[in-house]
Length: 158
Image 1 (tube, rainbow, N blue to C red):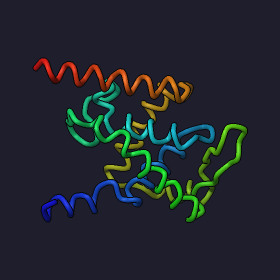
Image 2 (image 1 turned 90 degrees about the vertical axis):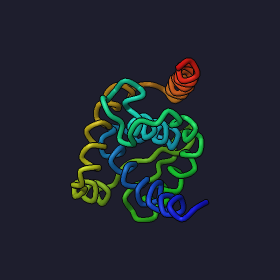
Image 3 (image 1 turned 60 degrees about the horizontal axis):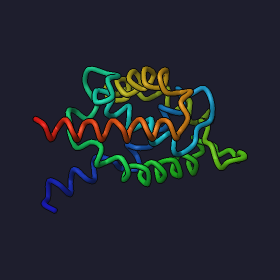
């Protein structure tokens, strides 16, 4: 790994960056969410252009975005733990596991996020959540998987 690659790794996908995105998602969702739903929706928001939900993606055009998908789950899990430890997110025990909800501290913090990236993320997240809020996790996972196969096939034919 060269110096630039190490630096980029420290800047992108840090617990801090991931936690900012997750706190925005939880602020938009009407109900508590599972870790699985959060990480899948976050992925779709970041690459909303690939999913036909935005003209441009927050991370630019990346034909290899699906290779990041599985590794993102652990990163999002660590971000959620950080948010819980800071009192911005509260874990709720439910019949089938744990769901997370934003706290008043998290809402206050989220409302103070005014960077261009945070505003753009929030805008796209609203669009994505409007479409995916009532989609169950299994269906959402299939949707992401099916699109990844379609994109890989189409990239191979170019």
